[in-house]
Structures are given as C-alpha cells and as structure tokens.
Amino acid sequence: MSTISVNKPATVSAWPVIFTLSQRELVRFFRQKNRVFGALVQPIIFWLLFGAGLGTARVGGADSNRLDYSHFFPGTLVMILLFTAIFATISIIEDRREGFLQGVLVAPVPRWSIVMGKVLGGSAIAMLQGIVFLFLGWITGKLGWFQVISPSTTALQWVAAIALMFVISIALTALGFLIAWRMDSTQGFHAIMSVFLLPMWLLSGAFFPMDVGGWLGWIVRLNPLTYGVAGLRHCLQNESVGVGLPSLSLCWIVSLAFAAVIFAAAWSIAGTRSTGDLL
Image (cartoon, rainbow, N blue to C red):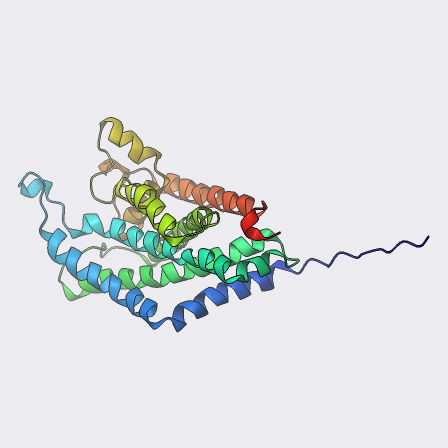
C-alpha cells in the first residue's frame, strides 16, 4: 500500500511579515483622516492647556514649592505615548472581527513576527504624536514663553530621549497587544485601560515628586513606567539623582527590561491557540 506524504508549507521569512504588518498599521492610520487630525491636534491641545493651567500650579502656595510646567512635561509626553500606543492596539480586536487576524494566524509565518509587526506599527504612530509634542516643548523655550526643556540639552541627550521614547512606545504597545489579544469587545478593552493603565500613568511620578514616602512611594518605585518618566527628566531637563530620581542607567535598564518582558509575554500569548483564532 502506497503512502501519501503531505509536505508542510515552508515558513515564510519573518522580516517581510513585520514590514507588511507595520506598513498596514500606518496606512490604516493615515487613511483615517480623523485619527490623523487627532494625532496632530491632541499634542497642541495638551501643550496649550497644560502650559496655561499647570504653568501656574503651586504646592502649599509657596514659591519655593512651585511645580511649573517643566515638572509635568515628561509625564505628559509619556501620557501621549501611553494612550496612543494602547489605542493603536484596538486594531487587533477589529482584525479578529473582520477575519484578517485568522488569516494571518494560519499563514506559515513565525508568531513573533506578527507581534513585532503590530507592535512596531503602533509604536510608530505613538512616536509621531510624541515627537510633535516634543517639538512643541522645544519651540516654547525658543520663543521665550516657558522653559520645559533645558537649554543645555546636548544633541546626544536629544537622541537618547527619542530612543527612550521609542523603547517606552514598544513596551506600551506590546502591553496593549497583550491586553487586546484575548478581548472580543472594545468596551472591555476600554474598561481595562481605565482601571489599570490610567493609574499606572498617574503613579509614574508624572504629577508629584518621585520621592514621595509611605506605601505610595513603594508603588511608584515598583511601577516600570516611573523609570521612563525619570529617564526623560534626565535627558531633557538635566535633573540629577539628588532630586529624588533614579540614575539614568537604572532608568534604561528597567525600561529595556520592561519592553523585553512585555514583548515576550505578548509573543507567548500569541503562540497559544484559542477558540477565537479558529485554528
């Protein structure tokens, strides 16, 4: 009796998959004019409102305890990266509903390339908004309105700040991927975001000094997003460890580890089968 052998399809190279999925996210973004409008206008709104409101904020009514806009600028920058990166991963839920995700999952491609493609596409969108807001922060100092970025910031520090923003975007987009992968409704995704991600940002030292004591201080220190905010303070405002910040090297180590661990978790969950995958 003759046997019939079935050859398994060869696995496709990962890099074309990564490029195609990333490009798809960007094409989808630029075709939705309302998203492009929001991506450009949102940083401007934050720039104007936070500059006018927080620029005159005081703690205890004393000039020595004044928290001007420069204190809130790195946290606001991380907030823009957070919400843009997280909202970009809503496309995973939409792709599952439309059947596109199922088609990608049955293709002979490495699962990590699917994760990387979606994460890089979402990170690019987050970086677009982040760089616009960063440019607005720079222009305010040049125009003499309010100084949020240190005039002594070197070119190397600018490059380091943008690189750190990219690492933060990767980590947050991967986190959004991790949350959205098992979700079947955008309502549930928004609920998780408001309960988990908003406090994560608030407890990153974005609004109050990072050397706050008590149990709240421990939460701030254990929050990996804290080190992204602190790293941007180091790069853009030349703040030192003496003002309660962790060292710049520690900020990089924690941020890179956070991105690596979350990406690995997203890769792991994407490699498991579920009834929603139709596999």
